[in-house]
Amino acid sequence: MAKDPPPKKPLRSANSYGKLDRDGFVHRSWIKATGLPDHVFDGRPIIGIANTWSELVTCQVGLRDLAGFVKRGVWEAGGVPIEFPAMSLPETQMRPTAMLFRNLLAMEVEESIRANPIDGVVLMGACDKTTPGLLMGAASVDLPAIFVSGGPMLNGKFEGRDIGSGTDVWRFSEAVRAGEMSLDDFMRAESGMSRSAGSCNTMGTASTMASLTEALGISLPMNAALPAVDSRRKVLAHLSGNRIVQLVKDDVKPSDILTRQAFENAILMHAALGGSTNAVVHLLALAGRLGVPLTLKDFDEIARDAPLLVNLMPSGRYLMEEFCYAGGVPAVAKELGALYRRDAMTVSGKTQGEIADAARVLNSEVIGSLEAPIGPSSGVWVLKGNLCPQGAILKPSAATPALLTHRGKAVVFEDIEDYHARIDDPDLPADETSVLVLKGCGPRGYPGMPEVGNMGLPPKVLAKGVTDMVRISDARMSGTAYGTVILHVAPEAEAGGPLALVQTGDEIALDGPGRTLDLLVDEAELARRRAAWEAARPAPKYSRGWYKLYVDTVLQADQGVDLDFLVGKSSAEVTRESH
Ligand code: FES
Image: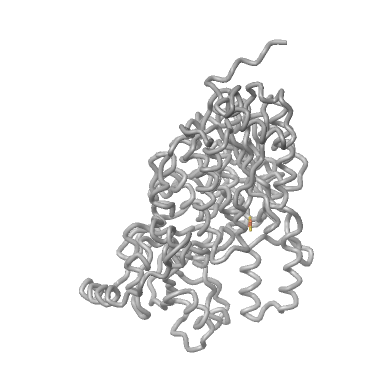
């Protein structure tokens, strides 16, 4: 039988496991005791599996079993799989917000990959922040890598109809507040929403980011949509194990895959999906790790001709199961046609064009076409103006069209506690024309930029049957949320952005089609307010630990909310022995 050609460059693991001396003894002896025989240290690639498995949330709970199938694939292809844990980041459980810890996961995984004797890595994540955190860390080391997602959970069910993760929680809770749904029904819906292992079943942040791993080319096709419990996901994990060994042999690194073209595909796919606004900060941060030039403006410009092609909640009607059965991301790529960067290479060994050519749409109600789209152009709109000099974003496909051009009086909440304390007050000076403004929820201010930007409406407005108002904040919003919600205002209030100066009663003008957001207060008055704001600044809140490091170094939303010293790569090189 013909022997495989040798790897393109010497394996990094040989520096630890290939030495016939005291150092080699130490490295081998302590790993052999995990159950590995002598003969596997014959120069085979050592493949790390960075696994965010945990029992803290259903999205990650299936990853331990799935890793077993990755291992089969690695063994079969002639590699040696070694699994290690990475921080779990359960979106619905962590306080004050999982986003505060995305960069901590990225640091953890970066140093775990670099410090250990591995030649390539399989990244296993499922929940919102695990995908970008794992990718950011791996990008900064730049060893061969492939992503395997945990897959979405089955469709939620309540009273005979499908219900979607998150999206229907927001809908039901508004219905309870408006007196249209009983608390008993609300509680019964809770058990039907999450019925299996897997990530949220809407096109929220987890599904968006999993879909973007395909568009970026860093996972195999269908990584996003195969349900967590579908046997074909096990096969995909196995094949990913095969591929990572080949990527090591061919020395194909993340920087070879995650090019500017790959990011352009991710932006196009994001628009076609009606994807989560959170993807904007994650892609900006990932591009920053790789040195790929990418700005907020690119999201608006690149995707302008890409209509909404996918009919999934929160922008549409269906859930991830239907998306899978309709053809998933490859079918969307096919429908994007000439807009898609077909030459972009992927970890599968095929170009994006080859993957798209092999796909087809199996249900045109779920995946539309450029000729018959599900909706109009639906990426994010990037707004600029004196209220957001470094930018803010708005997801038009989740907004009320009539509110996309609007002028109204601000009702200001200084922080989320102020919002909770006053939103139900019958005397709140708000009606349906008002603009709700929330401060103190940016990267530094909260800290961690939580998903609170889609703040609920005042009950007295809901009681009129009104379901949407213009809302503005320096926060993010859940990818499962909807509404005319302006997010990621930069600079944030805590960093001294003009948002800090808005007062109740000020007029605000939104011109969505013109991409502007302005506070209609004259310069002299703003200067007076700024001086008062500076004089009243409290002392810094955090004096130690991760919170302090984060608050002191985090970048604003338009730069991806990475820590300033983590931008860029450090390579996989470690020059010193440990003993
Ligand atoms: Fe983890 Fe939604 S809570 S994917």
